[in-house]
View 1 (tube, rainbow, N blue to C red):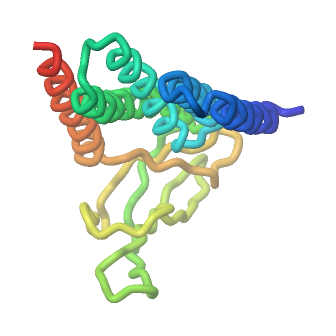
View 2: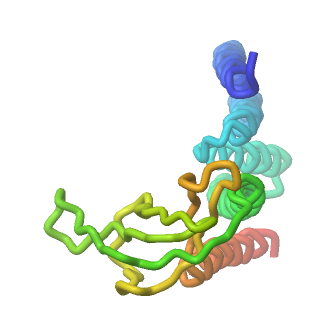
Length: 211
């Protein structure tokens, strides 16, 4: 059994067991909530490592729900504060896990796409399915004297390059036609700034609940 199938089966089993235990303890809201939180946490871990980004959300909600219920049960926070804590902690953890897996996934990608070459923009192909200005960028690049043409995997309408612009393209050393396009510096800065900004706001709100 391969890793993907094993994780899928494990995630399914966790989901079924969680639902069964929730049904058993349906008359005890606290225990029911804790079971739901732990189940969501474990389910999220399984599908995260199966490269399913929805796992980030399940993991974040699972941890924050369990913590919020514990704080409410021990009267550290009232009901409204516990709800605020859960929401803000979920956002904080979601952004944190997203940043961590962005870094891990990038390292894994660069092990495969280990060769960096300079690609030149030779064409901009407009998306025929929309009237908006979305373009697929077409590049030429050379490896060992052979020329290759490749299109970026997505249509874009922001930061569209000009014909003749250069960009680094990461190539599979075992297959020169298999390439990976890293995000531009502007996109990286925006994504990281967005995640860090939400984390800071969420953390400030969480801290204010205990002051």
